[in-house]
Image (cartoon, rainbow, N blue to C red; front, side, top):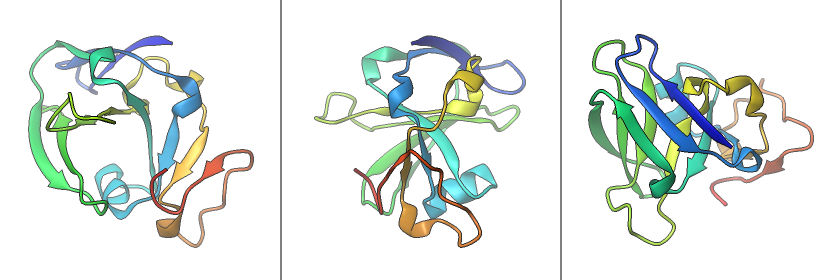
Length: 137
């Protein structure tokens, strides 16, 4: 599905082609901290299927628990996290992780899977009917 989105203040906008069957909750500690919640909802997108259409996001790089380096893109004005991108978009398996809540079609992006379930908070129930992975698939 083609969708658009952006940050809270509108300074940064994006366009992407998202496969709704790949939208997933991530329970990893990084996503908990970055979202300020128990998890973050994201959709993996091929690098060629994502573009920033307005503004210039700020970036910083982090190393995930998986050992992968991810470049985090966020609005320098309002602080909205937009996505993470690989340092090398041409690497095998590279993907952009779009933060689903920033999509204008957020309500259409139902959860299909759960990642890093080993970090799920004990009070957070499993979502019935989703694929589950202790770490990453």
